[in-house]
Length: 362
Image 1: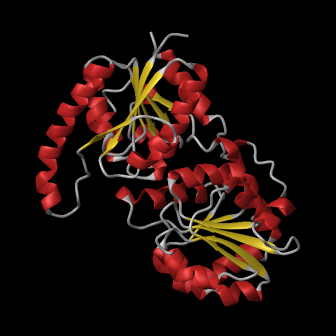
Image 2: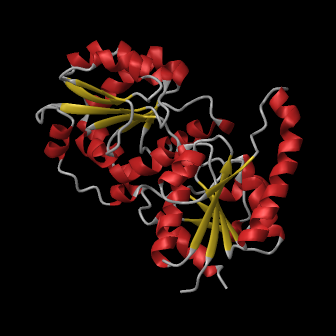
Image 3: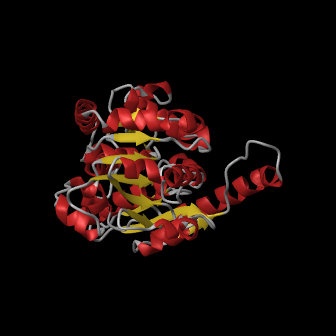
């Protein structure tokens, strides 16, 4: 069993943090005496979320490169040097047996230092288009766990293992009762239900779209569970009604998914992996402002398999109603989307990633 020590690094967004915590939880289940240390970026959300999950975290003074010349960019070399020095101290002191990176800028300096000292490193790439940090680390790490086919475009083929993305444990076997889930949200059991997800922070554009289309949804006799994000709840809570349930955040995702007949969602890697397990007809509206346009590429990978529908933000005004109706009114399309998205699910991702980590422990 061994008293192993693991460093897990990743953050910036929920998409990097939740997989990191899932991997730690599974390693802890296998090795109850193991020690864990997370490394994130100072003043990003991991500094709050990781301690909430019961793990220690150290923060590096690191940010990404902005696309334009800014003061932040001029500071980047200093931040990078500072982070490499701090990462070096962390690795020397903690002496990990293995290091795992789930993406985000903090994982770059840490995995560079650890791999340079011969410590086995694994990276987990959640997106269909590899992130800059993981691309820079590709020659230094032992294994690269991916969620999509065709990743040899970015990484050495002999290092790639297709595992899928870790998802929340309560979603692996969604056996929630649908009518119970509807009652939980205060909705009727006889009506079709639309679930709207704008990502962990909420989406300004999706929120505006839903608010503008409430009459349209009502005309279809639809009821809504609408996660608008905590930054937007003040703007939209007045739209709460017997048919429209507005939430800042959904704490019980398994119930939300069980209640839904159709889903509108952003296409971050974590959301896509969850929705494959859920297997409901989904319309993706990718965020256009994320790094390297990841969300559009993630959605396109599913559209190519006829497993989802995608509408780009700048096409919403023109195409939303007709696209939505084409899915809503066709049982055949709904069944095809459901079957195909479910076929892409990889429910044992966390276990498979931990198997790869364990192979490297000597």
